[in-house]
Length: 379
Image (cartoon, rainbow, N blue to C red; front, side):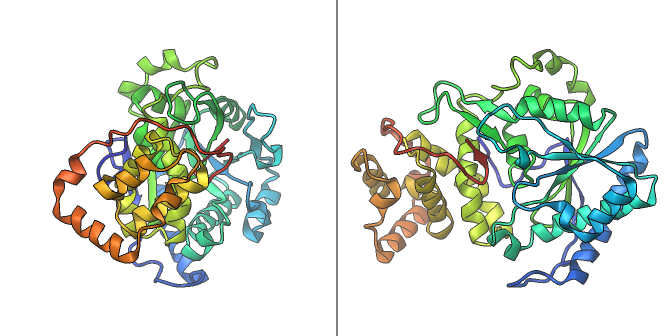
């Protein structure tokens, strides 16, 4: 479960927030503002590289929605260095090969690589702009990896993680195979937070540090502690890496699949991010009730952001959810509630802590339909 309002830990640090670097805007932020952000992030990144110059810097790219190489500065840098991105290999015949994430090594001692780095930081900042998010253009830049391994070795390791077998014991989705979007900066922080030490070791593999730009336009990083890295390695073999997360963890990851599009639709600002842990907890409880359709769960995610983040705790709401016909979407069962009803429900929840603490006691229902895609995790 994801608890609390922050995703910080001793091995998860903010390197350089850029407060007020991008003024609020209904459209795409100005290029000058984005370049200011990229310059600040570039300085943080260069300082980090100076700490350990022996490590390679490898750029993680997601080409599934937009091709980063269509960016003029980025394309020019790749051409001048004659670089060839290394695709991550995944093991699922239904996944499109052209959508595979790419790894691009950057030799930061060369000026052209610095141009590429600056361009990638700028694109990462641009892609977190609220207008870009609402358009569904995706994140071209998944992050930057520091490792002594080659891009080929990293691609091989990440390929073993890309498609996960869901465990038995889930109220829905048990036994299915799903794409783990560990390369998505809107997925990675929650995936890291929900993972245990051995799973974190497997996620990073030979990566010493991973950096990414978050929705606040801050450069974040995770570092796997050396003291913890030895023991988990025994678990990290190819026969186990495709089924790493258990039936207690997957509901949070599946809940994120519904939360992300709902949050993006509302701008993904600091207020929305602050509600994410509580919203994921609510959606996890709804999954336990048998809500299995992706659109249904996404509609319920919208209610956590527009009505009350723990709306399912209210007895009236819980009764509607538990008593709905098996074929009815949970969101449809709640559509009978008026604005006045919701106002009363929110007042009750705000004033009665017992609702927050009361358990959801309904038995699981069968899943309603099939969920085959999503922003967070996809089948």
